[in-house]
Image (cartoon, rainbow, N blue to C red; front, side, top):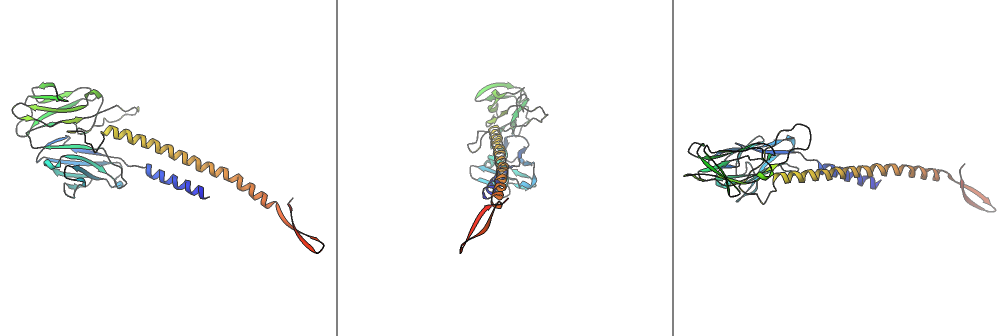
Length: 283
């Protein structure tokens, strides 16, 4: 009975530890680079609002601070912020139970040129448009676009579209507008198409000025979560099987023991002056 209680406890602990609610951090406007003074809204898109998701960040000056403490203004599941240089850093959503969402790296520049690119991962086969933008002049100026430090092409209108992206398109992108300057670099991540046949909505993916050392790329985080979930399922099934088998094996043993003990009775036999208690099988 004691061992069965232990198995039940392990089963419940495993069930609780493997239950995670999901959330996704989105950024509006959708970009990983911003000028000083820009207004940005970050939102935790939740599967379960009862999980208590909180938006947190790491910057060069602050670690794991949440919206509303020393930065940003909470608005429901969102956080609004007018960004400045010190707001550059890694942002994510975190629940009371511990699970976290995807992470995004936002860069705030004091320069005059930024590269607007997807802030979340992009899916293989999708088209991706990059915009080289200045702070004070129209955003249709001629611009040169670079990947991993090498010139890709020059565009007369400041826009560049990468058609049908693949994993080979992952990398650090930046742009340059003659007479205005160069943007910071942003990392663009490309994820594989879903293997399921059910229709799905392409999931945008994160870009960043550099790959943060405190966070793995989002697609690697997803693979880790899937692997952990699979292990949890296997553990739950094994524990449940052991619990059922122990109950089944115990019942015949209890019945057999009861028969043996019930088949034995005590009889008093008198021999001379002595009385001897004799045990004999009960018919």
